[in-house]
Every structure is written in structure tokens, then in C-alpha cells.
Image (cartoon, rainbow, N blue to C red; front, side):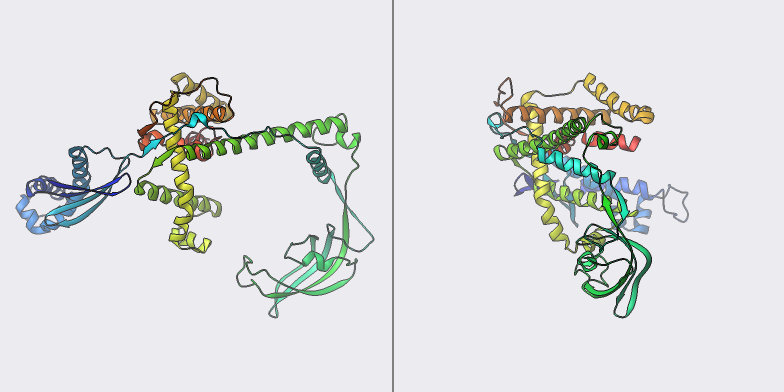
Amino acid sequence: MKITREEEAVRQTVLNIEMEEADVEVYLQRAYQRVVQKVKVPGFRPGKAPRRVVERMVGRESLLNEALDFMVPEITAKALEQEDIEAGAQPDVELVETEPVTIKATVPLTPLVEAGDYASMRVPWEPPVVTDEQIAEALEEARRKEAVWEPVERAAEMGDDVTMSFKGVVDGETIVEQEDAAFILDAEAPIEGFGAALTGVTAGETREFELPFPEDYFNETLAGKPCTFTITAKEIKAQVVPELDDEFAKGVDDGYDSLDALKDHLRQQLQDEMEHEDEHKYEDAVMTELVNVGSVELPPIMIERAIDSHLQEIQETIGRRIGRSISLDEYMDIMKKSEDDLREETRVTVEEQLRRSYLLTQVAENEGIDATDEDVETEIEEMATRAGEQGEQVRELFMSQENRDSVARSIRSRRTVQRLVDIAKSEATEQPSNEAETSEVTVEETTDSTEASGDSSEESGQTEESTEQAT
């Protein structure tokens, strides 16, 4: 076969492969062996008709089409080997013509990764501190949870609960009518201005007023249209919150000995939440800085495929929420955007995730960070313990080498992120050697590090997903 090679883009090459007749003949013979088992040829037992008879009956083009399934990938693989090309992912392959058989293979090369001087990264960090204002807000929230609604003999105020008969009319048609409907008066529910229109109403009073539905209202037939509301107030209730004292503290959750004890509990709870959130944010900032100091040359095909995958994940997420699968066209209708718009919006996120992933893999290699069989066993056992009654299913799930490798990569990614965090906080005890900063990293090496780089505080990207499936 004749091969011509052209560099189409960064880390991407094109092979134009023209097959000679002798090469094609081998594949046509294999195709014949398939076809002869499926066609009925008069005068011959099943599978025994000669090739010349079968070819005359179905045509050479049909045999060639049958051969394409195995011919194209095999020829492409041979061409890559002949040209000594290491593909970073599956090539995009196109049959250009059949006479002679010509194949165009667009090949993504392995990304070129340079970790840069990550040892000098410094990202400012200050431990979060709970303020007295936050404690006060938490106490108010606790009071609201313990509050009771009591009837009042006064005009309604914002925040009151008003029970009423309620009717809404649009274009002369009643769109809603309820008896004993209860609304807590606020600025927006059920639409903006409704609560304000009822401020000052008293029990037994009837009011009529007009308000427009928002232009972006979920019901498009009502969006922007004026609605005439008629209400008759029946009962007004105000929220009564308990006093902040020791008695109040004893009634919160399982009870606290005093108000001070409750405050201490809330302070620790807030501190834990803030530290957890800060950990996520800081890891993300460190990964962003890693992308700034390093560089990754990505083949365009890899980026486009990652965009495809990202959009598919979004579609599947929406599908799970609404209880059925949705097409890309439906998703575009929901978002009110074209496919090109969606892809461009996704591109920045996807490229960032890919760069983080490859850089994380390179740093792990530079630092000699890995996961032993014992580490993997410990991780699986911890997941099984968390799964409770489904623990044995989790253990069985991770008996396969593929899933165990996934756990190992997840551990390695997590440890690498922690190493980078230590460096960025200047807490590292040893300075790494960056003698081999540049390398070509394969897709397989980065498969599970994408989770860690996208949200680097996750403990195990695909691993956790697999556990959820088991449980």
C-alpha cells in the first residue's frame, strides 16, 4: 500500500492510504467467506457456492462493503506501524474512494506535556475563620426552624402566612382558582409583586389587582401577559420565634446544655463546612496555577471528542431528572442555543480539564507517585465498609483488573493533588527533581485523572461511580 503523510494540526497528522489490488484481494476473500454463509445460491449447498458465483450474484461492491468493517481498522493499524506513529487515541477514518481503495486516517498524536516549574508554585492561602456574624445567622436559622405560626389580629405584613381564596384570570379565562390557599408573603412568590400587593390586607377583606407574568415564565403561553388576581383573605398568621436562651438550646436537635454549648457546636460545624469548601477551592486554584506554569499540546480530535462526551453527559443527566432520554436537538431546544454555540461554550471547560489531567499525570511520573496493591485493597475495603449491606457487591465489583486499575489511578491522582497543594502552601519537605519535564502521555494514563483535575478533592472519579452502580 502507498502512504502519504501530512501534518494537519498541532499533535495531529493525516495518513492517505492507497491500497494495491493484491492487498484488497485478501480482504475481499475474507468478505466472501462471510457472505457465502448468508446468501442462498441456487444449485449450491449453504456456504459452498464458489466466490465467482457469489460475486456475480451480489456484486464486487457488496463484497467490498462487507470487507470495510475489518479492512479499514486493520489497514489503518498497519499504516501507523509502518510510519512508526504512536496514536494518542483512535484515528478518525474515512473511505475516500473504492477504485482504488483509498483511506484517509486523521490521527491524534499523544499530547506533548511539559509540567514546567511547578516546584516554584505558590498559591496564597489563609485558613477560614468563623465570624460572630456567621454564628448569629446560624442561630437565627435554628430559631426559624423551631418557630411556630400563630394567628394574629392585624393587617398582613411581608413574611406573614395568609390563607385566602384565590383566582387568577388571563385574557378572560380563569387559569387558577383555589380555596384555602396559603401564601407566605414575599417579594417574588408566586410571581413578583404578589406579596407586596397583599401587604396590609385584613381577614375578610377582598382585593383585586393586576400583575404581569415574567417574560421568561416557564409557561410560555402566559409569559409576559397581565393576570387579574382576586383574593379574599381568611386568616393571617405570623411566625413566632423562640427566645435565644438556654431553654431554646435544650430543644434544638438532640438538645444542648446551654446556649453557649449550642454556639460552640454551631461554630465547629461551620468551621468544618468552611474548611471542606476551602479545601475544594484551594485545590482548584492550585490546579489552575499548574495549567499556568505548564503546557499541553492537544490534538484537535481529542478536544472535539471530549466535547462530545461532555454534552452527552449533560443530556444523560437531564434525562435521569425527567425520567427519559433526550436527543441533542431536544437539549438545544431546552437551552435555546445552536449546537455550535453549545460546543464553543463547552470547549473552554473541556480543554481546561484535559490539560489538568495530562499535567497531573506528568507530575505523578516526575514525583514517583503511585499506588501499591495494598493501597488499592485498603481503598476498596473502605468503600465496601461505607456501602454497608451492599459491601460484598462492592468487593465483587472491584475484583476485575480494570476496576482495580481505576482505583489505583484515582489514588495516584489524589496523592498528586495533595503533593501540589503542599508545594503551593510551601509545606513540601523535599524539592522535586524536574529533569524530565517534557513527555508524551497516552490517553490511558490520564483516563481517571480527569476527575481529580476537574474537581481535585474528589476521592475517586470513576471508582465512586462504579460503587454507586453496585449499591
